Length: 580
Ligand code: ADP
Ligand code: TZD
Ligand code: MG
Image (cartoon, rainbow, N blue to C red; front, side, top):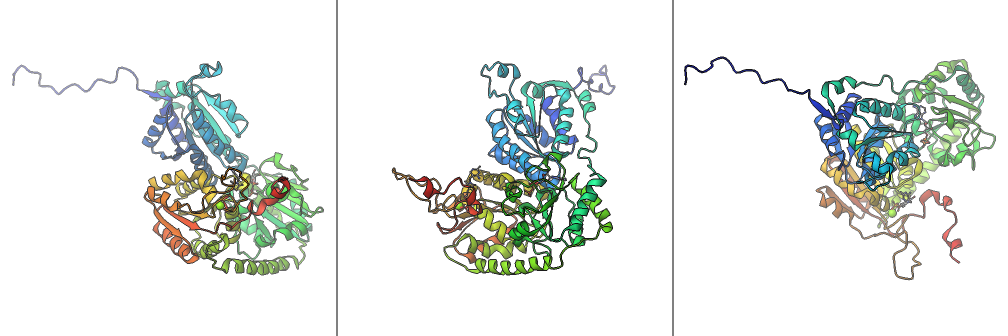
């Protein structure tokens, strides 16, 4: 060693010559994390792949899908269950449009979600010059979502994220589209400057207190009713004020009818449940209080069987909803918690005048109808029908009340909804307001991820086909989801009239011999093929207990199920009248 060598400690590494730079992609992930987003659902590629990588690095769980629509359904369900926006990440053009179907569906259903999509360079899109995946996405989205924004500069990303968040959860929740251009994603900024821009929106879903007059008007009308009824909708379930709603119902003693996704808000077997008396409520109730339920097609838009003299109270957050189908005598516009609180507080000042025979009559009707219904479920037919299959598993699902039930199909939807009692709020998620097929795997994934609970999806064979490939996502993420496919070989059933002169299958016919369990095998799931009610019961019990991905192919008879399930009356005309 040379004695002349410098023996002092080496100099500290030089500070970087330039301030550290970060990209728009990094700022986007940081901004999402900063507002509290902990999960993203999506499908990556140019220009958003690195957004997903950075999100993971920032501690955001990224659930990667096989199809954007399903990622969007998962985000929407996440939003519904958590009251925070579910986030969907898509690539430009078709990826964006695949996801947009789910964002539009979320908007229709009042679920809060944000679809973030990369978009191509603006200039060649605006001049229609044929750029990579060029599409004027912002304008395509605008008519279908609650709000749509584009962000062009990295320094605007935190504001854009905060605005999208606020738009998704405030007032009536819905789907929001956030367009982020490729140049914006790639643009760089000084890290320190970018960090300073991050902020958390204050009170993004502010309480909206109803006016005192509206509350008095509503209570006065309710108090005057001889045969009042409450209709609970998924807006009531969404509000997460389950105990307050239960207390209002029980204090007033007014019977209630839960819409499909409000089942379980109070247990379906509650003494005041008029679940089995829908027609009676419609025909005989003189005052109906809608609680987070729209008077849309699912309630015959207030016409049809409804008592023409009946009057409505409506607890609703969106003032524009009021009167849209029937004049509403007593609108209470506000958020559900403020409205129920205000109604509860003033309730003691009013004396209800409900006819004492009203509730007992509904209870008697419930008892008779339920007994008759149970008879139908008891017959263990082989091959199975929808009814015998549901009869086999009713007790299993009801004794696992914490399992979230996802459900789509026609007969598979209607019969499951009618057969399986729910006893916990927000434990039933279905194809809802638009009655669309293709929400199953996505919603099951969103429900499992957002809640950490086990999920059972009961799917018609047609319904499953729309989202089936994302069963592989359930397997990759090892989620506790059991998918039951009710295979009757078709849309509605497998015996569609075959009028083809070419020997092609009928338009409604699928494959009653298909072995869906083999699809599950491909991805390493626990699979079952069941042909009897007893086999189905054993398989489902085992699958739920395993807390692992499972797929049960439930073999039904091809003639089980009728056209359009319970809503055949909505067809423009029956087939016999069309064929001349
Ligand atoms: P269902 O299909 O169960 O009948 P809808 O989706 O038709 O229910 O209606 C839900 C209604 O609840 C919507 O009109 C929506 O604006 C309203 N809503 C959603 N969240 C709230 C809330 N926090 N407070 C009050 N109303 C709400
Ligand atoms: N496409 C989309 C996106 N949504 C739809 N609702 C339909 C098509 C039409 N449709 C229904 O309304 S129910 C249904 C379709 C295709 C499937 C019914 O068959 P299934 O259930 O196998 O899922 P069942 O038990 O056989 O009735
Ligand atoms: Mg079917």
